[in-house]
Image (tube, rainbow, N blue to C red; front, side):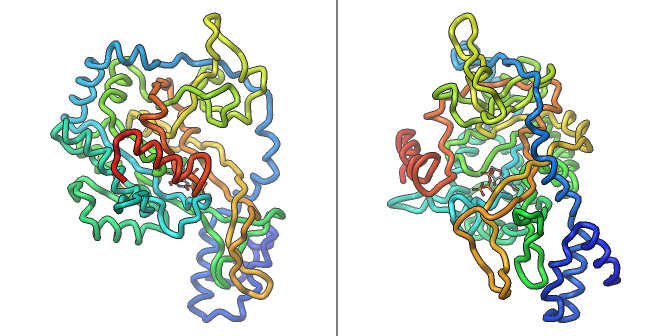
Length: 408
Ligand code: UTP
């Protein structure tokens, strides 16, 4: 690769500082570094200037939720429909495990975190158990796809191997790798993580379907007859996976997608609200909504925006295929980013020190014709592990797990 090309690209984006340790690199390292620079999408840096545009006026309305009472009334119908779909191989599950879990401060994939107290219980293990609660009843396996990143794919695959997939059959487990994006400081300068390596991090969970397809797994899923994909986060240890009642409800009520939601603790709870925007389903974050909107009530006194999403969605595959090339917004998020300082030493910052660029699975919902908000009971299905202590933490999740009879 020509060095001039590299110089040209760096100059175009004001990133010449990245070559400051070039002289210390071997020829082989230089070649790999140049390749990385050419392969990385620097256009993302343009998003920094556009941050403010997100605050424009929006046309947001409430979206009726399938509430717990209504689900109870038709539970048997939904369950049978969902179990039928599972038995006929129509349901696959996608675990989003590409994140870095910086808030938890655990140096490996979050799935390798041991949430047990008196015994070992890894998050991956718990999730497989949750899935097997369903497959044991259905007496059929659900293809289980795990999205990793370049940073954790080796350790995750090795971990599953070492633990015999926690009892799940290997023929039904596939791993795939998501794409990466650069991280930069507050002046838009990309960080280095080594003298010949850009600081790259997973580009958010919104690219999961295109990475899934690129890895050949769309063909795999179609080949197996999968029609629906249940996508969910790694950190909710009470996550119900391929939940037959949820799957059955979305099919029976004739939707092309669904999202599990919990009743908000109060109108200002910091969650994403599953709403309608310009007549299409949309997830709007609490900070994007005015106090007037958040406090709006229906004639029966309920909040109009009464439910928050928990990152558990069901999508019909043919609809995902329709939107595979449609762009979704890139979010600029502030994070703690390890970087090389002026002396060339690696610093692991205590505080947030720059930006990463992420697309989010929740933005795919807006591209669907409809999305069924499906209420689940928070104490039974929502115990996210984001932080070591406090809200949404190892501590709070352990309490909820115990309440649900899980031995720790
Ligand atoms: P989070 O928003 O909690 O991000 O991800 P995170 O990176 O795991 O954690 P923090 O914010 O650094 O503490 C929600 C879900 O999306 C996945 C995560 O693994 C988690 O299941 N995710 C996130 C990806 O698969 N890829 C990404 O690039 C980001």
